[in-house]
Length: 140
Image 1 (cartoon, rainbow, N blue to C red):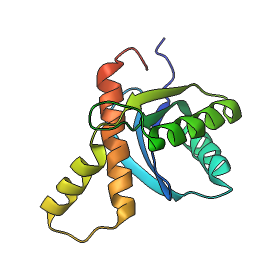
Image 2: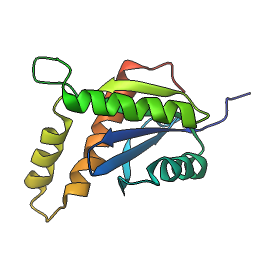
Image 3: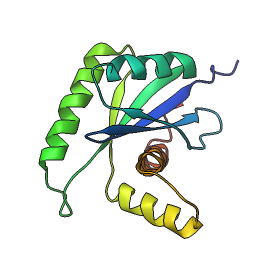
């Protein structure tokens, strides 16, 4: 009997927005899902996505400085991740997100089509999830 197929969600957490990507545990192909605005209801919005997507794991991108050092954004993201871990019924995992936003913006520019900041955040979440899937082949 095959295990049930669920979804892994990934977040690119910023001060104003949270990019969200998803991949199911069978195909393991990451795609952009949405961008959420940060505000008082952000935890509830993420809980709704977890339920709607039948998510079994939530991956949070961990930002660091160019030399791998912790920054203020690292601390802010860690605090948000801790809040998520306490509020959610699924595991919250961390994934280094080195330069994912720059990579996403470069890709969107190369496409030559108009894009918004939220598009960068959602594509950054895709890169975070792809890295997590590569580094954690057992999560399915």
